[in-house]
Length: 600
Image (tube, rainbow, N blue to C red; front, side, top):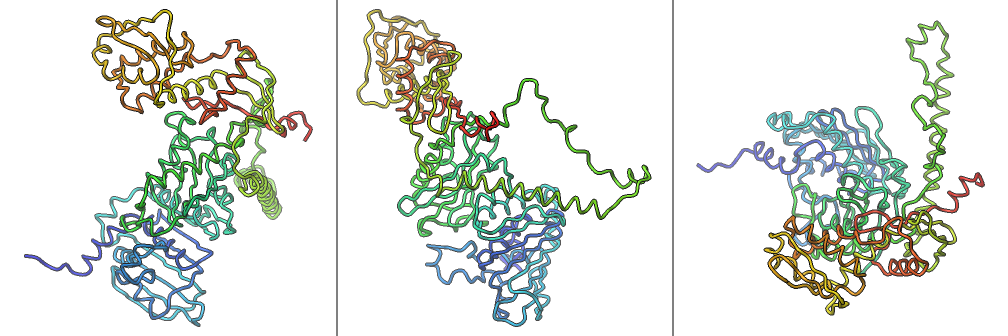
């Protein structure tokens, strides 16, 4: 028999698509507060949100006649017709959040509009309204959620530990705080303040409030406008990569999302700038016409669809590349990171001794002046706040986009001073001193020239007076069709000359004979792993690993060879790292040098 399910059962099923754990509730309520125009929101949780969640805002509030309606499924003020779904500009629009939350928990909402003399208090439980009465309250809305999944025990047992659920909420609130720097967001966990953003429109301060000043020092501003797209945010310098993507936040028109498209654009910008397994930090905020997106594809609105994914990926990639072309993106040697050989590193023993505990005081029989101790603690807290404020101000001066516009690094301003240790080329400009690793630089030049030759329609080769011959492994010869065509595209003239022997009559024009021979020997060695060079990624990886013929550290370069290397490096698409991700340049600012000489 086909039955129509009872309302409370249907509501529980529907709620499962929207509310799967405490973080879902916090997200929905926080987004409602933002849609309500709030400029101050407080999020409080206990026990990972399982037992208690409260979100308080100073937004527009809900009219008393609408307060109870807001708990009905598909009741919303965000859209009126199906046409509105083509260009959704609010975070919420389905009208499912409150109904879904109410279906699986005990909810209380207190709300008042600016014009109303009194607010309303709505109490609901398991999809049933228990109370709707007048209440005295400030303008805005407070929603309190208790006992999540009290009536769905099967789902409750699948929740993680309190700490794990709290971490999910912390991460989500942090991400939304990044997207809305104009909103003061406070987050409290088990009665302890986790963070508070200032709400003054300063994204950098929000990042530092949540992630700390160490990350803030390593960020580069991103700003680009192209057609209908605007990209803003911050990304980390290549030297400050991380082992995971945990510090990558993507936002489209104010909506925090998971996006493989934007993630790919970010990582493409860092291509060959990072080692394998390392990821940049990125806080990327994209503004684009809402009609070019579809936000109605995921129950929790975590994902969106773009009309033109390739265009979005390219915009993100180019915006981040502009930031990474700045001088500030180069690895920097700082005075505080340099220690004298005889200098003892700072250890825990060097910290000021902490105040003794109450039991220790009693054991010592000393009289303790509690007021004096509290006064000292307050002064220390004020001092720390002052120091942190100074740090933030300095970082803002260094990173503020309008004061430090993204301009490409200019090789023309470099003056070359010589080579030290037969490895590092010295150079200066008006504000920085540079060390250029000759091996990493030549690897980059070699790599890009070989790929350029591969992609060129006309190959530039040089004939050899004495052909080279190579004996290869049996299975390399068997797989000839997978690699010989790719070597021909690079400018090699190579052909079979017996059972497992190949003869080379010409090599790429930019290579010396020794370079060309070393490269081929390395290629044949790697082909023993049965690599298929017809796959572009495999080919690029092989070329990357086959840069051993590049100039080595310790090789003596003549002045004209050094000049040619720098000239070739300047022509590279990515002159600042070798194909393996190591830096070609390291810089030290004049200020850092003067600090070491105690001039500043």
